[in-house]
Structure formats: C-alpha cells, structure tokens
Image 1 (cartoon, rainbow, N blue to C red):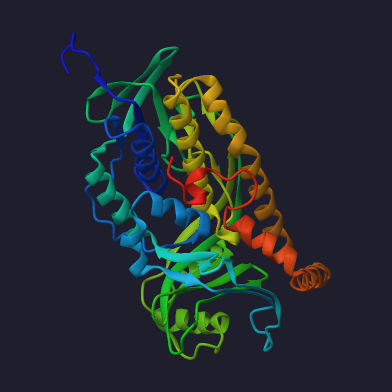
Image 2 (cartoon, helix red, strand yellow):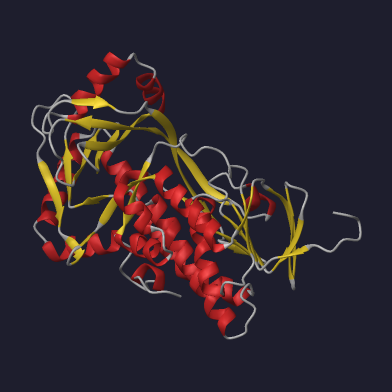
Length: 411
C-alpha cells in the first residue's frame, strides 16, 4: 500500500481461522447482514487439514449453533452421537472395573447430549461455509494493531492495513494478540500430556463413551462412526512421550491393558499424537475495541471434554452482543457492548476451569483415601437422576442465560 493510500475498510477483523474463529465469522456475517465486511487472518489457510487427527465432543448447544450456521448437515455423516457416558475408576492392572456413574438419555427427546466429530471434518465444513458466505480469508497472521475511540487499525502479515470497528483474537492459548493488547493471564502446566489417536475395535460401541480414571489421568474411549473410537489417554508428560515412541507392538500392549476387552480386539487406525496439558485464564476477555475468544481467553483440562464447547459458547455470546447493538444503531464495539460479552462468559468459564482443575486433582493421584471418597461421591450422584439431568444440561451448554445460537435460534 502506498504511503498516502487509505486503509481497507472492514467491520470486524478476526485473528485465527480455526474452529472458533470461523464459527464467529459466520455468526457475525449472519447477524450483521450479508453486506458486513468480515476479514479472517490465519497463516494456515490453504494448507492441508490432515495434520490434526484429533476429534472433539460437540455438545448439544454447540450442535445447535452449527446447525444455525449451516454447517451441521456437512458434518453429520462423520458425527457419532453419544448415547451413554460411563465413568469407571481403578488402577491399570485391576481385573475389575466397577462402574460408578452412568449418564443416559437425551437433553431433549431425540437430541443426544453430545456428538464426536473429527476436527478436520468440522474445519473443512466451516472453511467451505465461510467461502460461500463471502468472508475474506487471508493466509497470513495479524502483525500489529492500534486502537482508538473510533476504531482499530490492523496490520496484516500480507502487508495490508485495515480499519475496522472490532478486532477479535481467536489465535490460540499462546495468543500473540493478547500479549500485544497487554492482557495478562494466570496459567500453569499440569505435568500431564494427552496421547490422542483413533482405533478400530471388534464389537459395536452402541454410542457409549467411557471415561476410565487411572492414577496418572483419565483414559477416555469416545465413539466414532462404525466400530471405531477416539482415544484421549492422559499420562504424566515424560511417560506420554515414552509411550508414544514405543514400537507398535509394545504400544499395542499398553493400549490393550487400558482399553479392556468389552469391545473385543482393538488396533490402531492413526498414529499417536502427544499434546501437553495446562490451564490458562485471561485476566480480562476484552480491551478497547478488542475481544478474546476460545483458547486465547481460556484453556482448561480436557477431563470433561469442554474445551471447544466453551469456545463456541464465547462465539454465541459475542455474536449476540454485537448483533443486538448493531441493530439498534449503537457502536457494536463500545465498552458497554464488550462488557456485556465479558459478563456473560467470564463467570461460566472460570467456574468450568475450577471444576475441571478440581476433578483432575481429585482423580489423578495414587491416594486410596481420595479414591474411596470420590467413588462414594460418584455412587451417590448416580442415584440422583434429577442431579444427573442437571449435569447433562449444563455440559450441553443449556443452563443459565443461554445465547440464541445455542438454543438453535438465528440472531
């Protein structure tokens, strides 16, 4: 751009074109109207999506959001409904694996409380939908930005300069934009890593998910279409790396010890990938004409499978706050509008972060005393159907002040 050239005009610039970033772009395009100029920067655009072989649990509320955004029909053939969730607690070599807690049923008649979806499938569906919607996707990072009372000037890694009303950071847990905005965060590492991969097995899983608590961390078996499952195996970080580097036959032996024999034989479908686990919470989710969404705002332990769902709840809340303001002619990036988003999301996010942190500490240890206490507690909850129903609806994102998109309503 020449020295005297004017910046390009945009309504909203989003840094990060992952699952949360593209969902937000689509939600804002719907809410602000087809003429809204939404630009998404991400250096990963145009690269193959096969590198991330993880799968995510999509809660009922998030599934409703994706339906409103017009992407669920593309995802549905690769999505596996979770019909039952079983919680067990034992040591690796224990012969018996008693079931202490079972979640059964739908959040609404005919609506499962969650689905398992491959990340790459969802990413492709969102990317295709963004292209159809006319969202400007640029294969570069956001290099810098400066805000003032009337707008934000964004410099892209492609050399372009844009003038927008709002900048949203969806650039992950190590968010560069969060640092540039001067927003600090509270964080720590768990000393644990998740080994993730997909397996085939002999017998049908019937939509049953199993979370088997072991002293180093949970071993989750999450159903996928066909006789297949996504595994999230949590270990101490040094052990996780060692297991992932084992020869295939030795890794298979360790897998079989934890997987059990309920579903018959089991074999690897994809290579194991290792992801370190940690906790992070931004001190503020907003700044001047600036907002944090998804992992840029918060990172929690995957023990409850809520990471992506929390990000999509951010999307629903921010899109609704922005849309409501724009429709009555207000500045949709004003402090009052962004503060509404923060109030809507910060307490819920902090509560979920504390809950998952506590669960991890309660279950990931060798203490026999704690094991007795937690197993008695799980047994009591299992005998309280109303309480279990509340837990399911909360995990589905359907309790409290639920944004329209999570209720399946257009903005």
